Length: 167
Image 1 (cartoon, rainbow, N blue to C red):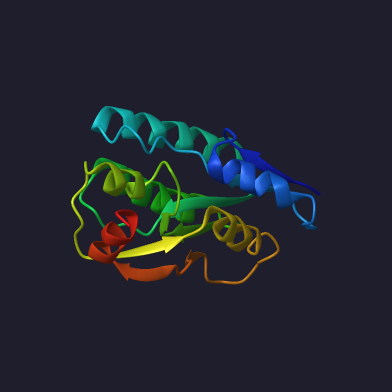
Image 2 (image 1 turned 90 degrees about the horizontal axis):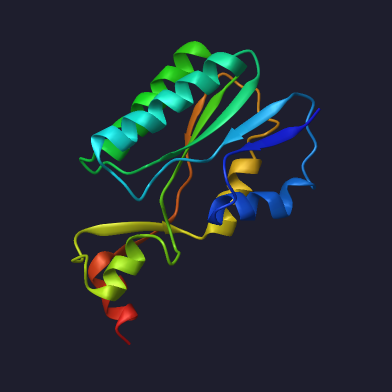
């Protein structure tokens, strides 16, 4: 069978595609890794959710690995990602959710800290895009009863990340 990446080839999609050929599986698996993280407006996030629901309805008898966020920030992005998780788990019995921490990348909150548009606050949990891709692909062959997973990252004070970026 095959593993299909659903969505574009952004940072995570590219990293997944680079190592996907090394993964063998017995089922047809879809990795749903795409979502608009830039525009957190309710209308944009609702549109992403609706698109995801249509995808699940079309493929609910297949295994879907949904890449979500471990964020607990009060945004429509987080709200609709977590709502999508619930929808998937209730409507697709073979599917799983993989929650990831913040990526270390030029498109994440790291960029906002380096540009000064984001103020450091609390503790950040970070993961490289490459480690995130490896973790996701580690669930391709999984078929257990637990269907929701959080991938741990490295925890560091946002204040220290901000200081490191200013060195």
